[in-house]
Length: 324
Image (cartoon, rainbow, N blue to C red; front, top):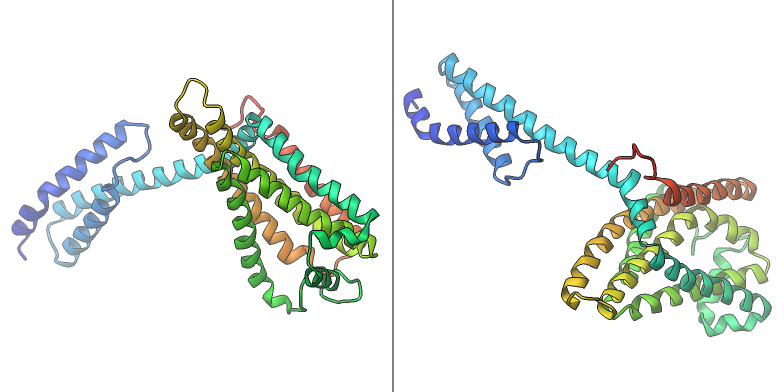
């Protein structure tokens, strides 16, 4: 194809892209035009054709300048997204948790209160565990945490190379529980309250029973590490669900739809941070919790992880210079 025909076919597209770049370079806003990446890819294709066909250096240089400017704008957008994500993790998420402290406190009372209460009752009255768990479930749990089993926290013994499979399983399982606890808040908060109590009773019954039968060391040393992130995530998922329910119960001067929309915006942001906590929890559970490390070491690391999570949610983002 002759250069003149090539230029006539694509000059309008190049001019349009140049105007887009002029506008983006004058603005500090992040890239908004969804057609820009596709236009940039077409320009790169045209540049490659011009070079391969030996078109004039003037045309090639012009397209190269456009391609360079386009690359800079795409890189700026990725940088802004990266900065926004970092700001959310380092400051935005813990600030949001503190902002919703009433719902967090209510969720913690439901979950941790039911967990501690049933754990003590099962420890004092061992047969009570069968009111929460079936006989088969109790038998399986005792086998998993038997000090002599050789496969701590696992239903069956597995090779270390299969830890990544369990990592994926823990991610899906834990995120499923968190989403269930959150989304059920649309039932005027009753669904979230139910799952907070249900999960608290289940975990507490397991903890009380294993402590009572002499598997306390294996159980507590297994859960203390990833529990800092996993249990915190369950509480926060419940808080996000309770916030949805409260918007429906007490919308104030807003309509229920408007109140729910506002609450959902904050709750969805909370879920983003919760997913991060659950990813960390799954990694620790798959690669650390079931490892053959001494209980004393696991207790020490677990205590440090709990301190890290509590400090992060309590203090991150309070500085005047914290990212916005």
